[in-house]
Amino acid sequence: MLDKSIAYRNIIMKIGHEKISEIAPPILPEGYSFRFFKAGDEAHWARIETSVLEFESEDKALEYFRGMYLPHREKLEKRLIFALNPDGLPIATANSWFTEDEEGYKAALHWVSVCPEYQGLGIGKTITKQALLNFRELEPNRDIWLHTQTWSHVAVRLYSDLGFHIMKAGKLGTRESDFKEAIEILRTVMPKDFIDKILSEAI
Picture 1 (cartoon, rainbow, N blue to C red):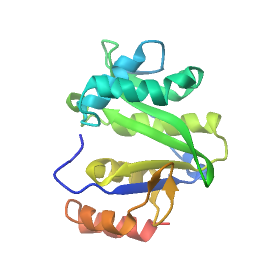
Picture 2 (picture 1 turned 120 degrees about the vertical axis):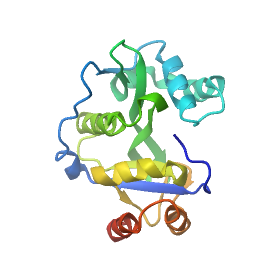
Picture 3 (picture 1 turned 90 degrees about the vertical axis):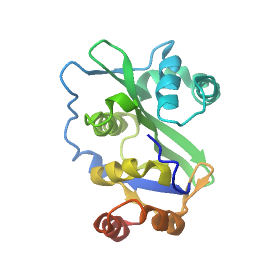
Picture 4 (picture 1 turned 90 degrees about the horizontal axis):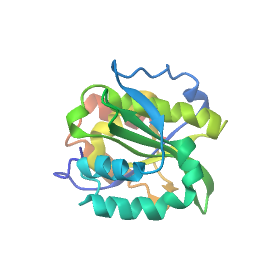
């Protein structure tokens, strides 16, 4: 869930491709499972992303998805994953995607989200691991980038624990790092020892 009580600033993070091989196989809670995108799943994606306040409505989420991803349907079937609850309902998602900017092609983790009622079960970390492992097949020997924001400070900790480093400068797509401002905002909601850690590891 986004924390919109604090100011929004962009955060760009990156993990080296060699680190991905060190990630342990992800294990979901008993009865849960993974599957890739199939026709009609855009509605599930929109529901999940709206539930965590990324969009103001499912219609807005669907509009974004149809413009950004549906033109690449064949890629979605290998890159966009869902975690399903024991009833087979998608309740979390992550996308082993890519972007291009003036710096060139970049493998990029997109839209890691877990429905609020399923948060706290370790599903966010598990689906992120699975998405990163997918990159080993999709983008061998490429470092993986992601964009997040101060509103997602819980996710910043998760990504850091998995081996991502905050970038002091740079951009991903159209979003540029707000490193200094973001760190000052994170100081207000995160422990000092964690801030010290991410500063010491920043690249």
